[in-house]
Image 1 (tube, rainbow, N blue to C red):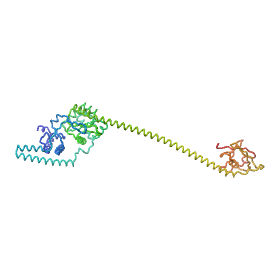
Image 2: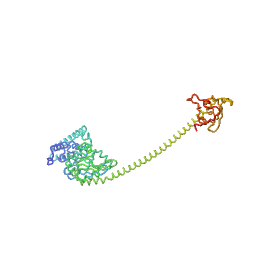
Image 3: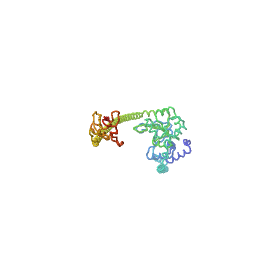
Image 4: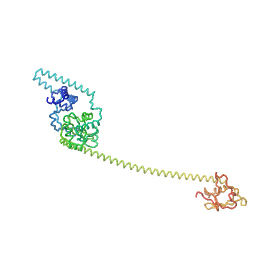
Length: 462
């Protein structure tokens, strides 16, 4: 009862309620159970009920917690270490029946009846309590599992930690647990998780002397990503359920193994900074091979991806060059095709023009008047020199229009298609071309051509 005198009234009440609900006679065991569950009566009772259903449970006595010894505990596919020794207590109620039988032999029939009645009462009471607590947990889930922001929980824990224990500590990752896992996996680093229990008696000393030790701070900052949270917050409680902690202070070391973050070490209970550093160094050395393999695999994948990207870029560049060549060839073919169409169109246009000129010469040939006789007093003798050097001689009457002269020259086979007729000296271009702009063309007489004249034909297309 000396230990009970050091407890508060509320803790003593919880201790008595746990003893009454579970039937554990040893008060030190009841106190250890409540301390392990941070004096949460409901969780402690539920754990005892799970024990009676055949699920394993572990209790820690005060004497054993004062002298922690490392214990190997396989987790996942790698070594895991548990710094707190474990002492299994019997589950169920068969051992109490043995005590009742012993008392019967000592006390007689009265002790036997009392023990039997106590056994039946406790068995029925435990069963009913188990059903009630199961129903309560079913219809009223633990509020720590829902309705919170993980980042806010972590920020609140870090702020509270620094206000209570100072700023000397490893750098906390200020994000959710899932974010910490993702960063450690991405950066191929160890992840050290710290679950903080404010009610535990060893927590203040551990935070000040171990987490605040300069050597430990330097070691963790250099070797691992450090994440922590209080188990009284929803985020910390969820992580505690996932990591299945048994006692506090609690540390877990995780590393990437087979593409997923795996717990490779659990460290529970009070431990000094030197021993903790040595234990972490040993765990990291044993599991460094997985990180080396992961780095090698990632480098190989990165090299393969880089090589594939370079090959794709070279292929794309080759395709671009081929497409550019094809585009240029297509443009050249289009230019050639356009030039061919232009030439053909020019040829057709020229043929149309020649055909029109031919038809025009036939039409205009009938407009050339008959040549007067040489003794006609109205006759005008004209000598016409073509660009080819050929001479044409013809007589016209003074009253004939100069258009008749143009018709005559135009219809001659050796005449150019577009021309003008001019006098020799002084040079004067005769307005003889048929046109709509000059409705009335001069006659030979009006143009000053009376008897013998020498005229020159100039090719306008030359």
